[in-house]
Length: 506
Ligand SMILES: Cc1ncc(COP(=O)(O)O)c(C=O)c1O
Image (cartoon, rainbow, N blue to C red):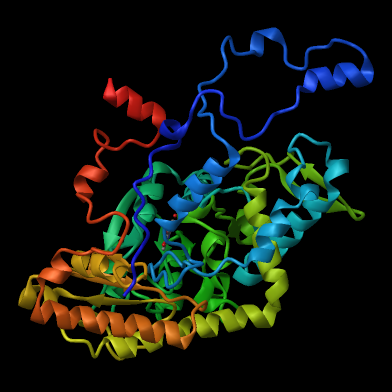
């Protein structure tokens, strides 16, 4: 049985003692005086603090031990299975981290003259061409910092397209299926569209009839995830594209989880005009608590003129930044985007190559279907849609039967898994599934690890039917026991920084 470390660790501010030192920072001004002999002030007086910031004072060993103890109370992709459906928590190769941290890259400043940053411009240009090739799009912008950010940019481009055609006043509606990720309707609304929700049919695909009924001359476009959030491939996608394009709308592809189709099929070949990609999922860069993301978007030829500036262009082997794009929607993020993240994706694609990426797709699909077949035998678990259709990268179960028969909810299952040293799946999403458990194994795990997960789920189901208290009171073996979720996420109780803590304490 797993047991997570449980330290009674104070915050670092409470550990500090006045005068204790970990590192003596050299006096830079004194050093400069010594070398060049003048007394210039590196920082102008008006920019200097009147008194030093109140930072905790600790020795190096105290700091190392503090953070090591905290890390022992945490869980990460480097420890074991992290089957968060739709989040694609795959292994993040360490070599990519080393590359992104190398001084020749990390020390570049975004204000440097483009003459002096030809190397990074070359990398970013190549990456955008590879992403265009992978998605079948014509041009790619690397600027957005997350999937949702890419969605916002994509829907703004949709707007710009209809505006240029003098149709924006009429085309006010964006069609989105009820299985969509929550960011889809949020982004569409932020871009000024009215969201029209269409239901899924009994096969877990978007209902074609409902799309036909929803489409009109008010349609600006459709946002679709394919494979959708149930892990099912929308087999009627070509027909859907015909309906939307026939009505003058555009097709937006939510490519947060591109892993199952890499090298197999391309969104633009399915008929999509705008595609976003979650670099931090598909291309193995850390996310969640592990790092920032990147959500590049690719567009078809007719929409390329709307992409944000600057565009990285090349002329006679020299890269330059082109701001002269009169139809551009402008800037969506400062400078060039999250370059460190993009660099890791560049290394990931380069190291795998075309064949490796295709293998990613195959293994991620194989793993998800292995789990689907094994988990469906577990008492109390049902496959809510199209039981006999293979899934792509993820599968969704309903534990509603288990809930009705034992009182144990999906949330309790998710908590109990933690006691076995694994992360829980996503729960209660997609919203169309009761007591949903959404599981994405990714291609990063061996069969033994998947079998361990299957055995764990079986044990939890057995426990729910025999002595449910163990599941209802889980977790017991983690550093932090069950939280009051509503309280923990309420702005009044949430304390995210030391400053907030002190303010709340009064
Ligand atoms: C299907 C889908 N679309 C969009 C997003 C949004 O991506 P991000 O979290 O990077 O904003 C996610 C993230 O979980 C997702 O799973």
